[in-house]
Image 1 (tube, rainbow over the protein chains, first blue to last red):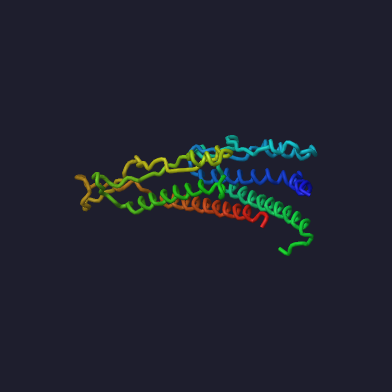
Image 2 (cartoon, rainbow over the protein chains, first blue to last red):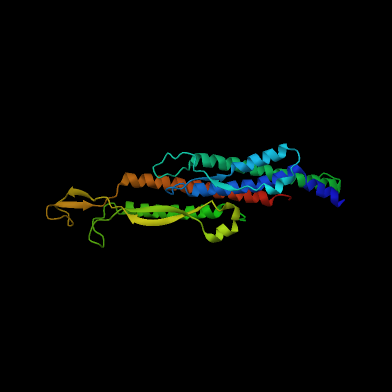
Length: 132
Length: 142
């Protein structure tokens, strides 16, 4: 019995959603930092390390995502994207707002996915579909 | 980990922008002040920002060390020269009838004010999104 519920919580998609939620929160922190520093001279924008996404994709494609715990999102300083301002700051407020909204949608999707996962377990336990 | 991700950065930014708006208001209020305590016309004040990271917040968020908050670095005086107009009737005019006016440019101050209030709005939007994320995280399994 115990093993069955554990089986649901150990599913690849569930595990991946967990890491992606963390990544989403971290990205929001980075965007908050960028928007807070939109007028700080010399500030360079920070972003989620693209290594995280590629690692996650490779792991999911391999079909046996055993090392998911090892994939941790992290931040990097994005000094490559060009600065159009004389003070060297490379934050573009409109693209930050856009990625903030996209990130919030992504978070909502993942949170709902989590919710549905729990609901499925509850349905299995009670044998009835809960009304809410 | 914070309950509201990134909200402390936004709060600091809101505070910094508010201070900048206060200084702009002071500049605009003193656009005609020809005498201050130092005996010269009012000098335009400039606010400069710097990014910084509170060690306490950094310790709470070890994964997000690169994300920085913002604070007012200093409020300095604009060293550009005063404007000078011929106004011999003015009590603060010098012997040759020239009156020195503050080095405040109203158009510049208005543009700064707009840019400051837009930044303020952007940070408020971030706070709103942070709250939305927190609420959704709390509603998992409810």
